[in-house]
Length: 248
Ligand SMILES: C[S@@+](CC[C@H](N)C(=O)[O-])C[C@H]1O[C@@H](n2cnc3c(N)ncnc32)[C@H](O)[C@@H]1O
Image 1 (tube, rainbow, N blue to C red):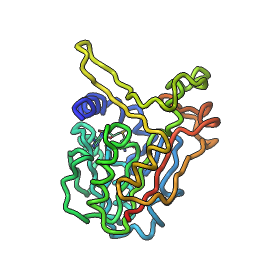
Image 2 (cartoon, rainbow, N blue to C red):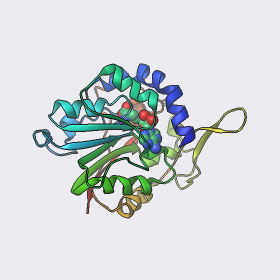
Image 3 (spheres, rainbow, N blue to C red):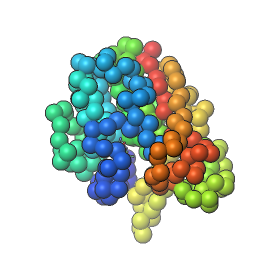
Image 4 (tube, rainbow, N blue to C red):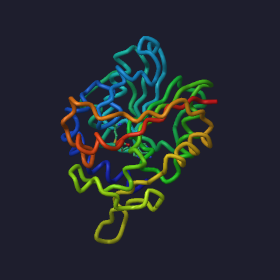
């Protein structure tokens, strides 16, 4: 968590400069493919969002929460990184911003109707079940949690948008985390790999029922590269997995 917070605090400005236009200030985009909640309706029909309390986890600059507020929902945007939330403040919005860890949510049981996370927290935590259990705790019975993560198959390929990113270079089954270190050997960035099966088991262990697993296809209109995500690779293998879960 320490490495994670530090990395996002140091890199939030660059992230928002690089991706802010694609994300839009008040759009709800699930990942680099550009799947938009307007079309996907993974949280349910937009007209049913009005009045719903929604927790956005790993919100960054809270673009998704801002879209939810525009639908009449009552979002709370939570992120571990203070600097990311400063970007949320800069863009503005009439909803609470909370700086906290997804593994220890500062809310009472049953506070929310829905929860969502677009690439927030779950790719970066060593104990995803702890996060899922926390989200379950703060949701009301029947509440939905929809989260997107890097598609597990991408772990096997180099993080390159060009042809060099199309050849398997690592074992899909190797769960060793990806770690970047500083000159003193301290971890400064950590990303954790889970296979598809691991993610399904995590969802169930967290007390959820898996309703759908969406693998957005790369649309023809999207010519943008985002790290290793690109039109070239996106046309061949999935880059994002969106888990649609309901609290038992
Ligand atoms: C890839 S960004 C996604 C941000 C935003 N959802 C978006 O689509 O632009 C990941 C975000 O997750 C946040 N994050 C990472 N670990 C977290 C944790 N344990 N608890 C809460 N937020 C976390 C980071 O600070 C960062 O803002």
